[in-house]
Length: 460
Image 1 (cartoon, rainbow, N blue to C red):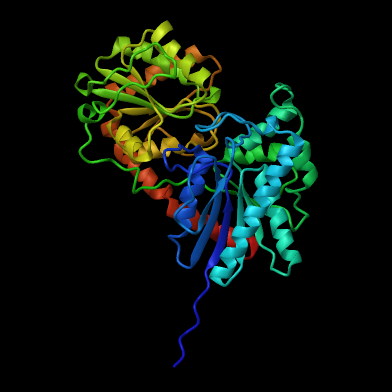
Image 2 (image 1 turned 45 degrees about the vertical axis):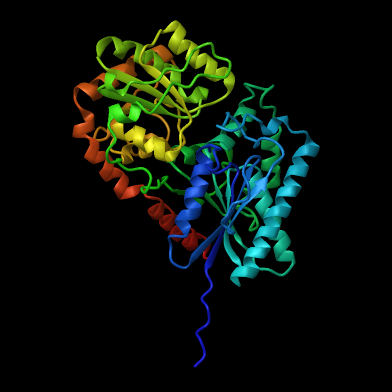
């Protein structure tokens, strides 16, 4: 009796813009999402995913289905600084840009070709992360393959915030030196988001309703019924309440981290001095409005006893200096600690001991850190803009009114922090946080729902 033929998998290809979090190189949100989705697809029966992402630091990945696209420079970014780069696409000459594109296309073509030979089938779906270069690269590679007689691969684009904001900066012409009108005419002229071009992007994926509105502001002719909202999921094997973590034993593991060249001496934290913790986790960028939390800390440090404020993350040196000078110079904060970037497993411990997470970010595309914090049983404070409007309500925290006045926002954050501590939100709202995450924000659920929608809409 002959053996039954081996069933071929449904193949997905993902092209990332940012690095994954590995070998001490911290990743921005889109890199984290790409990595989670890659592993999430492998949780689904009959599905395999191949991925490529850039890095100038990482060694080849041990998983043969993952390729590190080696760079000789920092990872290019569209807009704000990432944890690992401030090297913007606008600094590229036309020749450098074309050389980067050509080299990436060759790497993608080679990886897809070798994967198909190994798997015995063709890629059904290709996903480009970001609305900038990657969709163009994948379209060119797919069409090259079609000319060679291979079947068409459906092309989707996961639209992240920074690429869209880059186009808006160009169109607004408010910062012509930083964002000259260069790449929006290029991308628009390429017709990569032309609904009538079957070789172009056929499905756009976003993480919130706010991202739908932003995408359509930039690409108004793209069919709205081809835009899918896919709320972000998290790895619940990492982000969950960590047993055995107390404020005393966890905080006592840390010392403050100061910017390079700072005259300040690192301070070893004595966790026994604190009963409550307020935590902020983000890259350092203007849109994160970290100064509002520092102004808030100045107020609640004077009203409450034994409260520590943790600022976790990093950014450009100038911004590190600006924030620490504000905290320790102008505001003279005594219980606020900058901890630098931390791994996901460490973040889970810090979220677990926190009384509340304070994330007063402006127009956050989704707000993954909100979900990570809630997954550890900790309520959240945000502002009434962007993605968090879709899932944060009074059962899990609060969204404060939007304002451009940083000091006024700081006053509001301080009031919310004091209410969270005095009303013991950690006790009364923790279960609602866990329930919300369990219902809708696991990675497996996200990729399963997304693939089901993509297969239906793209008929693949």
